Length: 483
Image 1 (cartoon, rainbow, N blue to C red):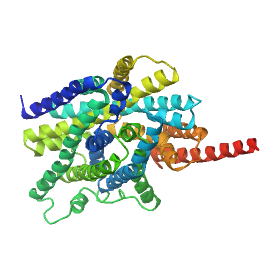
Image 2 (image 1 turned 90 degrees about the horizontal axis):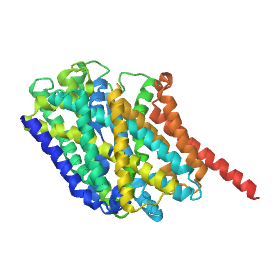
Image 3 (image 1 turned 180 degrees about the vertical axis):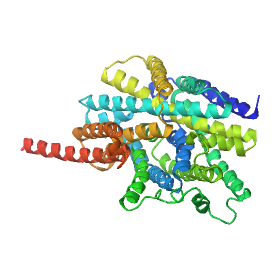
Image 4 (image 1 turned 30 degrees about the horizontal axis):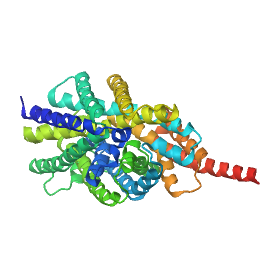
């Protein structure tokens, strides 16, 4: 048995052990879905960051940087700014606001605040979550197949099955407790991967004589002028749109249910201050590292060395590092997928059990039965994502962009405005969710529109205007009727 395989198996044993250890903690639905609001700032911060940065960060973004070059910097910057904004302006306020209504989920929070007499918000929000998270989870399973294929030569089909099986098992067992504590372990491994691997790569470039006294950008210029350009070689309006497209990734952070759930699950609002510092430091280090892996890989191997650019990170690790360290870092890639997929499956589960079954359908079984139903729903949603992962040919980057954009547009404007705009009402919330999700869906399937701006930006802007316009229009109509 190789050192790489030994390290990987040891990692899987650890996460499964955590799942078994935390299984007994789930006595109520609140325990299963948000850990009973008992977790400390370190666990919450690492869980939010590990959940937020999936296979996309270690495979998708590194591959994009390999393909695009220096211009991918705008994506990294947009993501970091989005993380900072969310933690500074949403985290504490949402914990305070959701606590007033004792809400366990995002749809329940919207319903309790804007439409106690109606189930429409909860139904629409739940359907959107289930739909987009199926694609998102499928992206993580697909990423698992790629990493296991590159590292161990396991066929993609079996790699996807292994990754999905482990994730589903510990999530079903331990619920949010297992997800959060495994996220802490996974977040540490991911950060180590994203800090150490680019440093080793830069040293390798230097020793190969490809940098010497030159800068990385000069080394990239050898791969083509567009690779060393901050705007991908674009000019005029094209350059402006290039920058905007990259920065637009940051918008999604304000509306990702699996991330804002961490704010809702904080022990108390005062924990937000410490958790914010931890999360921001993690984000700056991780995104810088991911970008550098792609750029260094471009300098080392060129843009066309691999048939699939998203295999760069595991290949780079196995070529440059001692086998035992490569094993740990390969586990980091799997960790990234697991830490996101488990959180997303759990949020989709909450949409089925807590929002639809419990709240909308009015079913009131015992807490023990609710936890059991949640576990069954976790399995069903995971299996649906597994089928999609095995049948789709989309890249991880593409699937994540679609799901990220849909969720960010559907919920981001509403979350921000719900905390800072007192005029927001039920009609505005519904309009925003529908406009964001439908715009994303339509935009994704029209290539001409995508060539101008991505669906994640178009959906967010349309949803924001829809929320404001419909809220003001219905407020005015109500005031007129009252007179």
